[in-house]
Length: 130
Image 1 (cartoon, rainbow, N blue to C red):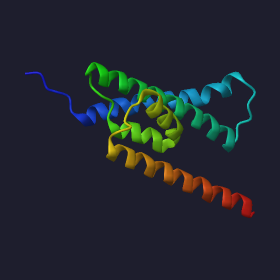
Image 2 (spheres, helix red, strand yellow):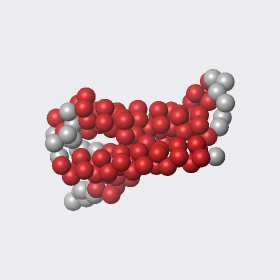
Image 3 (cartoon, one colour):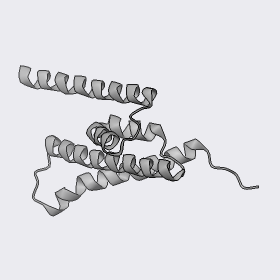
Image 4 (spheres, rainbow, N blue to C red):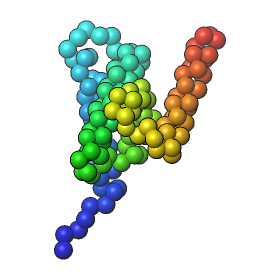
């Protein structure tokens, strides 16, 4: 009998695809353009790449939902948002009308956004205090 794959296996597959794509997209501009390598440009490139990948993952999940195919686990969508892809997640939710009704998903997403906003405020306060 054929063994059915478990959710943790799929979780590893989606994560092992998303993170290298994010890192590759973030690193590519440094190879092709004379961009200074410092913490701010690296952070900026990471945020651009993780938001693009997050947006694409929401589009893929919406398409899979319509087709009845295997879905992208919510923990992957939340994980990408947590890693900085909140804007891509938000745009994906709004543009594709995806995951906008499920209350538990929305609560978790907005907790991530709140945490990120608090982190940004703390960093700004710290940088302006010196």
